[in-house]
Image 1 (cartoon, rainbow, N blue to C red):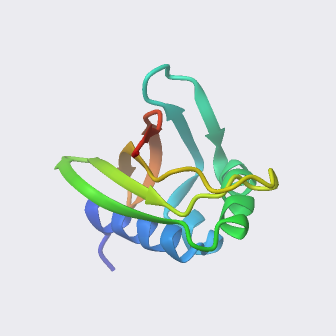
Image 2 (spheres, rainbow, N blue to C red):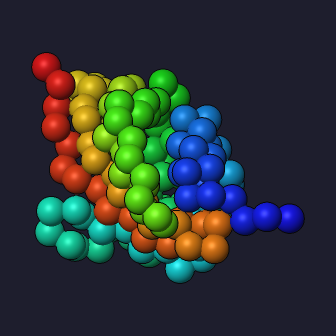
Length: 126
């Protein structure tokens, strides 16, 4: 069995995200994955526990949430996605869904799994 390419892994990750399937989503990441803010370098989460804590409630609270790739670039083990996110509803906050937004996501894929990722601040679309 061959190791999937970085692009194949990122596509599988986005498909699981859009299906709000936390198990399939986590399966695209290493057990010790780390996610960072792109502009500050601050760590957002670590490991599958961090993924489940952040995305599990988000998936449950946002049944219409979807991400669409606006632009994608690949360079070796890196995949750079400009994403357009709609339908996000803050988990447990009882707030109306915010406006759609753009976000840059950078994924590093090693050994067929995402081991590091970086996310830009949201840019709201008015």
